[in-house]
Amino acid sequence: MGLEKPVLVTGGCGFVGRHVVLRLLKMGYDVWAVDDLSIGQHPDLWLPKEYISRFRFFHQDIKEFLRKEKLPEFGDVFHFAAVVGGRANIEGNPLAVAQDLSIDAEFFSWVVKASVDRVLYASSSAAYPINVQDKKNAEALSEEMIQFGDILGQPDMTYGWSKLTGEYLSKIAAENYGVHIACIRPFSGYGEDQDNTYPVPAIAERAARKEDPLIIWGSGKQGRDFVHIENCVDAMFLILDKIKDGSAINIGSGRLMTFEEVAKKFAEIAGYTPTIKPLVDKPEGVHTRYADITKMKQVLGWEPEISIDEGFRRVYEAAVERIKNGS
Image (cartoon, rainbow, N blue to C red; front, side, top):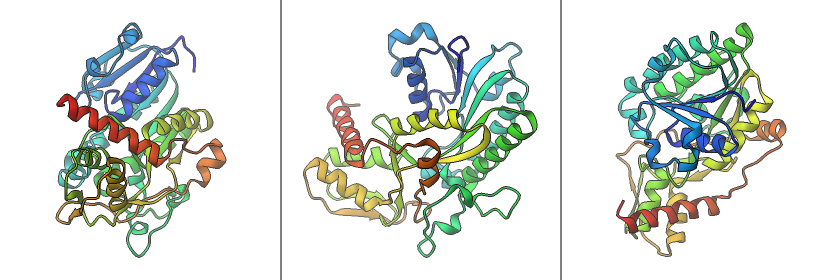
């Protein structure tokens, strides 16, 4: 990736996007970010002033942006633009989430015509078949469980279908049009600045307020594979260097942790022993979702460095700070 070309980040003001933007700016790149701010935060809230001269922000729908007649030649393109939100949105408003299909169709149509060096497509662990994520058939999810040209399992809701479709379009872009493209399947990313529609920051804030009972959604027995956002970004750059044929690699820790365990961990950090209260009427998604990280370790020679203890402590301390500041 050459410094002489700007880098494009779609969905650049969302949780993942802004972390990638900041990493790129720290590395010395000029960055263009596009975001309609339906979910993301305006750059005024998170962009350090020293980077303003190398950053261009477009408050615009990504499809409108890609239709512009004159765009520069981009070096790398990171595609995060999507309708997602937390579990409530994925299950409660599936047709809104299905707009991701049209976003990706337009994006890939643009990619094969544009002159870009490399593309990173953000897929999701939601692309994996849900029949291997229930109580009876809980398996570590390996990349080989998704095989195009073979029988595909059913992914998780419209969000999973859109990401599965995006991976298929990535393969087509690589094989038929020669685009250098890599796909990532991140598991449950979390971080200090993630919004409270996601479980980790929401539970952390309740613990920071010493709430008792400490509420969690669903049965609490459902489990996920949690990985800190900084580790996710580390893996993304490695994957883009290693993969160019449109194939996908997991980003995870390989560790399964239930939401009951998450609540207990935050209570431990907060220094109290509350009653853990599951809200069984709230959506919980699949029962078990965690990564097989064999390929990740083999291809990247890498594993996440930030432990759950360290990562959760950071999230907790950020929640305490927000409460002190009344935000």
